[in-house]
Length: 328
Ligand code: TRP
Image: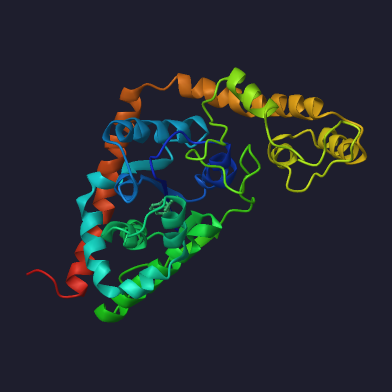
């Protein structure tokens, strides 16, 4: 039996951080053996919000390098660039005919992005974000899409569009994908905010140096009501402990720190220093692998991957066009 297929991807907006690591990278590393995996660099999607041509090029290389450094194996997973496969954009134009403006206005991520980035009027492309994402997914006949909770509404749009095309064609042309929800809760920012995001500046990047990581951790937000080490502290909602839970494999140490913290028997400095050690165990090998990757290597991985991916997309587009009566 052939392997089931996964399609997933990142917008090349900047260096990946430890939130991406628990949110998507770990699961990619786990799933890459069991599934046929395609990983897209969603550069077109990046144009839906402000983007800069110079950093875009850098980010495309870096997002792939970060994935590989984190353990995604380019021999197992296929990396490709969205904009280099024009058939994806063509499928997106077709799919756009089968949903309404109203439906897309109800997608919750639209309001979130508009409010986060202070956008009054969405561009046509931003409104159509989920349609383009549906084209990404359906092009590959993906069975599974690993996503965070915020992306579930996009998978719903994707399924609706696939059903419409299948109904119209009178046969099952497009595979209905299922979301694969990430197990781990979203990582808080180093400032305690609900979202770790480069635009807020509260991330720890996978490529941060040891010194930077230390500086960021030592100035992390903790329990704001705890003024002295002898005050009783709260572990819940405290990003330092959330990171300990996510990255410190010495469970006895974490448990001991939590006990002492809630009793007012440990200082922030000790808790944070131990977190620095745990993070360094994770990040040192990633940093080392990243340093061993050249831009030329990454470009070649992308060229080969894109050529291989494009064949799959062309097959699907051909079937869809025939199915709905387009062309000769
Ligand atoms: N929307 C995704 C994000 O913001 C990126 C993305 C684009 C994607 N196309 C995709 C993810 C297809 C999974 C499948 O993270």
